[in-house]
Length: 143
Image 1 (cartoon, helix red, strand yellow):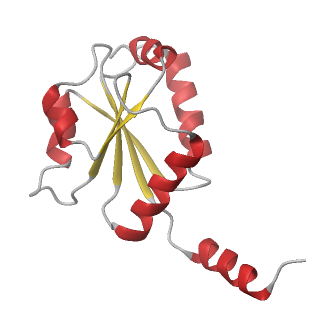
Image 2 (cartoon, helix red, strand yellow):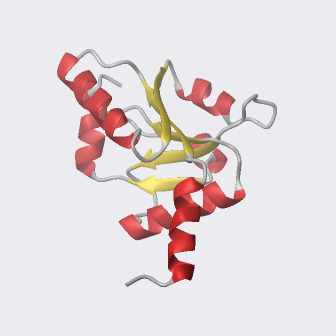
């Protein structure tokens, strides 16, 4: 049986606005199967967050969305093989903290097969470690 205070805390979480996520890929895929998987992933994410998927020509285009003068400005999170490995709980804590403290949408950037530049790593709020399998999937997108 739940106490009254836990019920209120659960309902306040349910009523809070969804975190805004943009997932950006550098380079367009040439593979219909990869695009289909990408679309399915975004559809699943949409149950938990306001999400948008987009493709950019190059890293510079992604960085422009995170510049101080960008409107709307985004908080950059790199999905990078060299990034920090986080557990699911740690990632959830990061997302919840961002949602509570920061109105800027999160931009999760999936780099080209050769990774990100030092400039992108310095601009990022978080560089989230991905597995070599993820890097292979990025390469399969044609990036």
